[in-house]
Length: 260
Length: 179
Image (cartoon, rainbow over all chains, first blue to last red; front, side, top):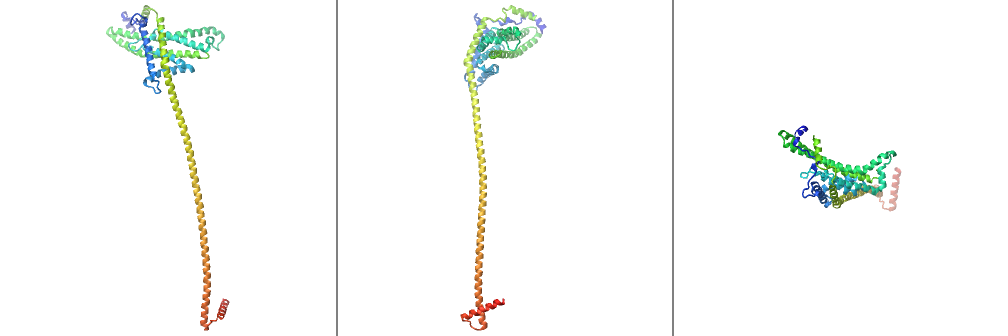
């Protein structure tokens, strides 16, 4: 197949990061590009759905309310309550927003017509991570005080003193640089790679369709792979939203814990 | 070759994808904030309200069921006790009745025996008196008959009272002697 692709190379331009750059849909504003429009569309979509489904707050829920509650309950109990414990309630709105926001924007990647995971533009994962960064540091400093927070962070108990030379900077880096970086990069990387993969098989299939007759068979393979991978991507999109939210909950739980 | 092309394409198409655009970060912050405020004020409190109401409803239902069950148990206990009491009472009444019956039968028997004894005694007495009467009557009769017979045989009128009794006495004495 690779050989065949190589044979077909002269005309085929594989998708690259350039395909992630969009011209404004209207006017010249950067705010009118596809990712930004999708992002705000997701805000409208999520808030409309959950406000309508929660509006009645009936004891015996309608189907819509049940659907809304299922997602809310998943974040509230499955992530918030299980990970954070006692004080989980005040973090539920934050976790709920993160989960629904990421999930919806990720799923845009496989929804026909949209077909672009907003989170594959690193700016958006970064903006969510900024909130997370401030929240978990704020929570910890408010609970333990800045001095104790830093001390607990860098000097874990029960470790031989010379080891602190190595461990203290590492722990400090973990909390202040590695955590936020990995949080944003993981989400961005998964969405970016997934979208690239789908584009490769779709564009490849399209290109092969216009080639010699015997290559049309491979075009069919390429397209069916694109469809199969779309389902695979859907799984990854849900998983990434879950992992992101779970990690945020873990960071908050760590910030609230008495010992790090 | 593919990788080479990919890298070429990436380097050709402007900035690296891992460098965030400040504008997009700002847009992301704004979008997230809007969504957070909306969900926090409009959705989460309503969901929580539904949760707590449902919990209350279920808990209330459970509590009511528990109360009902307790009441049912108390009632059952009461009825069981009452039933036992009633059974005991019935048993007592039966025993009383049996005892009373025995007493009544005993009474009746005693009375009947008494009556029988009385009747027997009366009969014995009347028989005795009748026998006495018969003996007396017989004696007079025998006397008269004997006198009459004797007078007939002797041919002598024994009208004289004194003589008559003397003769009878003599006769009787002789009779007794001969016996």
